[in-house]
Length: 328
Image (cartoon, rainbow, N blue to C red):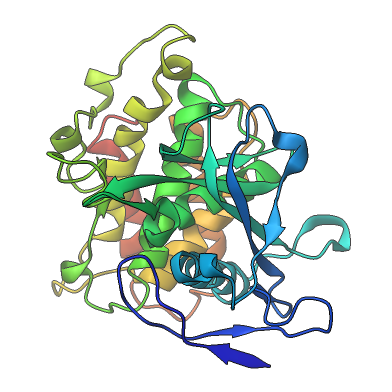
């Protein structure tokens, strides 16, 4: 096992384990979690997708200076899925976490402020943007990395149709799990960061705010649900997910009768993961509410059976969805 100390594109140093082999020493791979990071060398994933994932990055490679954090962020997601969600891939398959940095959408580009989970290739691609004249990979943002890989988990479990409410649910569940990953090591929920993509775009504080969706131009209640044609953001998937996000925020920050938080990162993750397993391609927000309630009832007789607040948890879930208008 080789441990490197490369520098990321923000000038910070860090450690990660790299598996050495005879052919390409010190590659960025983690065989225990099956995490591998590649360089797509500014190719278009749209036009040159057949070349994905690209070149497996070697630690001594110059590209390692901008990718160690991408690799570390993916490892954090893989560990969360294994250790917190305890997810087992279907049919005895081994989980794999493949990502490619230095990707563009259109041939000839060098800058692409985007990232995407690709169903056909079962991997994530990350673009890059300029900061002070230098290109920085979007993979340095842990929230974005987690969000995209959880699209992959959503695809594997629920297979949401990426349009309208089911597509907004896909976006929201990816947001929820990403928030839980990024705040996992902060036990005080009052100190959690609920924003995504801080500093990604000039003049914009963040691209999404789970606590306050309206601050990023999203609706936060079904009274403001936006009906859009399919050609407009697949029917508003990046708008209306704010409603379900706010319900999740209400739920996670619920307090018991003593003023203590009812949930933590682990219990909230278990709840939403079990709910996700009850959803399908055409599920809507109301289906998610039902799934979360049913998941809580299941947990009340399993993992939460000795939890004195389990009844309060159930009431808090109902209230969280009521507050945003996701009602029967």
